[in-house]
Each structure stands twice: as structure tokens, then as C-alpha cells.
Amino acid sequence: MTLFVLAVFVVTYVGMAFGRLPGLRIDRTGIALVAAILMLASGVLDSAAVTGAIDFPTLFILFGLMILSAQFASAGFYDWCALRIARAGRSPTALLAVTVAVGGGLSAVLANDVVVFAMTPMLCAGLKGRGLDPRPYLIALAGAANAGSAATLIGNPQNIVIGQVGGLDFWRFIAACGIPALVALVLVFVTVTVVWRGKLTDGASKAFAELPEPELDRWQLGKAALATVALLAMFATSIPHEVGVLLIAGALLISRHLESRRMIAMVDWPLLLLFACLFAINFALGRTGLPGQAVDWLAASGLLPDRLAVLAPLSVIASNTIGNVPAVIMLLAVWHQPPEGALHGLALLSTLAGNLIIPGSLANIIVVERAHAVGVRLGFLEHARCGVPMTLISLAFACVWLWGTGLMPLR
Image (tube, rainbow, N blue to C red; front, side):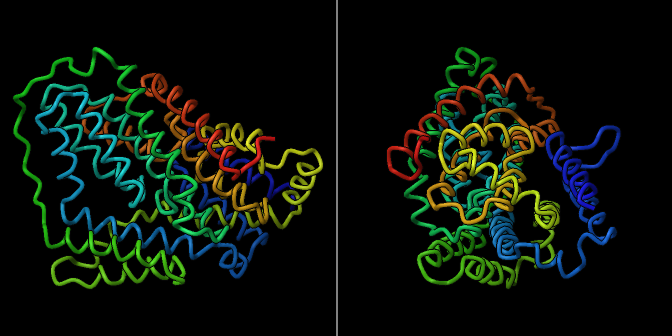
């Protein structure tokens, strides 16, 4: 049975790396779901074990943040931001700076995947209408969304997992990761500006095709802003994070104007299902005893990722093969009670490493797919020309920061 579990586990994470299985139209969520079903059907796990393996507080936080983001989307806020960026009467370089600032800022409070999903189509339309090439702006949006999300515990899914597993404090996390995230945002802007120098203004025109003005519901936007402030205030109290997020989500679902069905339909259910299945699959592997043996071997060999010399290259490799979310879930399933500084380092480095190439983070993939749907093709090499330098430099600064502040040793 151990070989069966190991085989299912390996196939699952190969699927995470490639995004699908050869010859089949099954995505990451479908792969993880089938693997979890096989674990259940084979008797490796029973229903009680599956339920016990799932980290429901993490899923509750993700769900609540998606409801909060749905409130912003229903108010027309994301479309309004994207179109205002594209229509702003500024130079292309200034538009790039605004794209980075807005994308990074929103992603620090609202999950980065949701932000880029909502903003990409309208941003493409507005930039094309001005005669600008949307590709450098899309690279900047994805890079900024990843970099900005590294600053907080609720900026992206992997940080939420890390925060729940380690019981990390929200504001102490910002103190540990905020400065490197801000520096990474600056590096995103500088890198795209340098790599695309001379091309940002190609075809630029002040006149552009009229786009339908997105309706901005100021009342609903006010509710969303108030809910965000209330949520941040709750993080300063002893209320469990998942309870605070669910309270905010429940309050937003009570509305005279927005149907709760519409709000709930905007939740990324496939992502939540992916998380649940990965928790179950990793739990099944843990029952074989293999992960424990592997950790003991790493500890004896001095290769535990509690030092930057190990964690930094591991983050780059894992994030850009199986993806930063699956990598974090897998690592924390076998690495019990890591030190707090290592958890801060894992969150920061795994997130910034996701900017290297398109498969490195879900936010990158979403930007590429959403842009393709509106006729903008962003290629692998085009992204990598910016992604590689911005990632390596931001990771180098992050490592120096983590070492200099005493959060993690170098060796």
C-alpha cells in the first residue's frame, strides 16, 4: 500500500508541475480530486481521516476573503481601477508605476489571484485602446501582485496556510516581510522599465476607442472598504483569524441589493477544492512514515530548510516546478514545528520566487490566460526576460533582510 500511496502522490505533484496530465484535459484541481478519490476508494483513507486531514480554518479564511473580494467586484471597483489606469493622462512609464502600485497594494489586502483575475481584461482593453502594448503592463501587474501579496498573511493562499500552521501574528508578519515586499515592488517597476525601454511608447496615442464606463456603486464600495477596515482591526484582537474573516463575510452576505447567490458564485471553488484534496493527499503520505524518515535524514544531514542556504534555492525550485501553493502545503505536511523566522522566510521567499517564470505562481497563469481570452498573447520568454532578474534581485535582498534582522541564519 505504501507504493500505491507514493505513486499517487508523485503523479499528483507531477500534474501540479505541468498543470495537466499528457493527453488529458484535466487541470490541477481535477488531478488532486482524482488522487483524493483513489486514496478513499483504496481504503488508504476513510471519510473521517479525509475530514480530519483538511485544514478547515485555512479554507474558511480563503472563502471569507473571496467574499470580501466579490463585494469589491460587485461594486465595479476592479474594472474601475483598471480602466482608470489605462485612461490616465500620463506617460506610459507613469502608467506602469500606477499599475505596479495599484496591483501590489490591492494584493496585500485582497488575495492576489482574485485581483489579477478581475483587473486583467479591462486593463488590456484600455491599454490597447490607447495604442499601447499591454504585455509589459501585464508582466508588471503579475509581478506586483506577487510582490505585494508577500507583505501580509492574507495576500496569497500560501501565506494563509503558513499563518494558520504557525499561528503567526498578522502585524508582526508585516514587520518581518513588509520591507522586502516593498523593495520587490520597486524592482518590478525598474526591471520592466529597463527591459522594455524604448518600447513602452510604441503606438501610443492620446485618443483611444471608447470603452463602456464601468458602473461604480459607491454604496457597495463603501461597505467593502468598511469591511476591510473592520477585518484589519480584528487581526489586532484575540479573535481567531478564521472567525473574524467569516464574520465579515457573513455580514457582507446580508444585503438588500446584492444577491447572496451571486456573491457565493464568485468564490473560486476549484481553488478551495484543490487545497482540500492536497491536504488529504499529504496526510495519506504522512501515514506511510516516509516523510518522517525524510525529515530525520535531512536533519541528520544538516539540510533542514531552517537556514537561508537551504530555503532560498528550495523555494525557487519548488515554486517554479510544482507551484508555490502545493509546495508550501507539501513542505509543512512533513516539517513539523518549524521556527517562526523560518515560516516568515518560507512565506516571503516562496512568494517572490513565483515571479521567476509563468508557472511559478497562479497569479502569473491567471494573467496570461485572461489576457489571451481578450486577444493579448504573453509568451514564456517575454515574461522570463523580466521575471528572472526581478526575482533573483528581490530574493537576494530578501535573504539579506532575513539574515540581517536575525529572522533566519544564513547557514
